[in-house]
Image: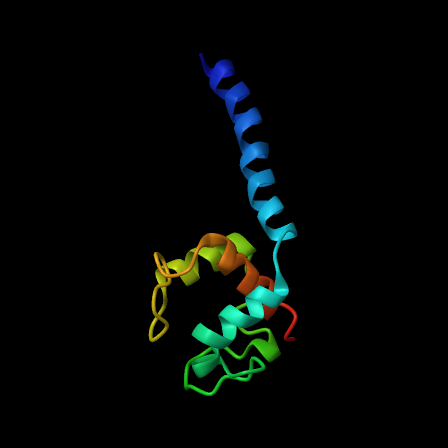
Length: 105
């Protein structure tokens, strides 16, 4: 029984990882820039220099020392003054924004 579960885990985990890495590899930085300008720039600044107290300054890499998946979860759920974007942005749009903000520092 345990070996059967272990075998399934050995199959499922790489598939799950591949799914998310494909999304990241297929990210569209141009689209990420547009979504960022529409939804994020008012607090995080046009070029990643935060304009609101407490907002991460992406030019200095603040908040970016996490995996893309962790950032996806954070953007979906929001934090402090940053609203939750679950239901507002599709996952691919969020991955695009993550790819874009990683170019700012």
